[in-house]
Amino acid sequence: MSELKYWLWLTTRKGMDSGKALAVLDHFLTPERAYYAGLEEYEPLPLGQAQRQALMDKSLDGAERILAECDRLGVDIMTAQDAAYPQRLRQIACPPAVLYLKGRKLRFDEEAAIAVVGAREPSEYGRYAAEKIGLELAAGGAVVMSGVARGVDSCAIRGALKGGGTVVCLLPGGVDAISPRSSRFLAQDVAAAGALVSEYPPGTQVRGEHYGPRNRILSGLSLGVLAVECRPFGGTMLTVSHAIDQDRDVFAVPGAINAQMSEGTNRLIQQGAKLVTCGRDILEEYWDRFPGKLSAAAPLPPQVVRARMEGTPEPPQPSGAAPEEERPEQTGAASGREVIPRQQQRSRFTDDELAILAVLAGKPLSADEVVEATQIPARYVLSALTMLQVQGAVEERPGRRFSALVELEE
Image (cartoon, rainbow, N blue to C red; front, side, top):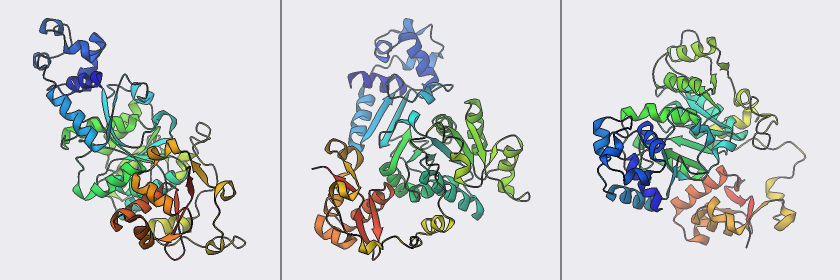
C-alpha cells in the first residue's frame, strides 16, 4: 500500500498522462524513486517544464484521499508493474499506468473479450443488432465490453446481461462518475456481473478529451472490436482505428445502402472487416483459442433470444423433459449443482446474494417469501435476484418462484 501511494502521486501530477508517467518510470524504475528525486534529476526526462515543476509538488494528500475513496467504494487499483496487469495492455502504445476497477476480479488475458461500439443515436435496427449480438456473445461465453453511453453501448451491455455473461464497461471518468445519469443503474448491474474500469481516479468527471484515451484501452483489452452502426467518422471509427493499430480483429454489422448510420460499418466491410449478423459469426473465430471458455454448441434458438430480449417467459422445453414444478429438489452431489467452496463465496457473491442463496437452498420461493425470510428490503432482493440469474446461480420457475442452481459449502 505504501508503494501504491507513490503511483497515485505520480499519475495525478498536473499534465501527467500515462505516456509521460511511463517515461518517468522508465528512467527511475519505481515511482517512489521519482518522488524523492530533485529538479535536476528531472531534467533528462522527455517532459515539458510544467510537468517537471509538477513533479516537485511532493504532497501525498491527494494520493491518500484517492486511496481512502477507493477503499470506501470498493475499488481495486492495478498498476503497470502488477503481475495481474493484462499483457494485452502491455503490448499497446501508451498503456495505462494505473487502472481503477470496481466489480469482479477478471483475468483479462484468459477471456475472449469482444468490444462492441457504435452510434449514440442508432436506428431501431442498430439497437436490435447490438442487444441481440451482445446477448449471443455472452451466452456463448465471451466477455462483452463497451461503455455505458446511450445507444449501441448500453444496448450491447443490456443484451449481454440478459445472455447471462460477464460484462466490462470502460469509463471516460471515475468509476463513480457515470454519464449519462440514466445509466447509473446499468453501471451497478455491470459491477455485479463484471467490472467497471477506468484509468481515472474516483471523483474524476467525464470530459470530452477522455474518450480517446478510454477507447484505446477498450480495444486494447479486447480480442476484437465489433462496430454495429456508425458514420464514416467519429468515436466509433477512432476505436476501430485503435484496434487496427493494436492488431485486433475488426467486425461490422452490415446495413442498408441508403441508411446513413450504416455508412461507416459498410465501409469497414469493404475494407476487410468481417461481416457479422449474429454472435456465432464472432465466436467461431476464437473457439480453438478458448475451448474452455467459448461454447461451440448450437446457437440459442431465435425464440429464446427473442424471449430474453423482451423479458418474456422462454418457450417450453422439448417434450420428454419433466416439467419444472415436478422436479424434486435435491441437494448435494445428487443435485448436480455446482458447490461453491467457502473461501470463494464472498469473492463471487455479495452479502445479500449469499443470504438469498441460503434461503433458496431448500425449495423455490417467491420474491416476497425471500424478503420475509431474509429481511432484506424488497428492492435489494429484486436486484440481487436479477444478478443471480445473470450469473447462472438462480433460475426463475413457473409462478415467479426462484430456485438456486448452486450450493454453498457450509
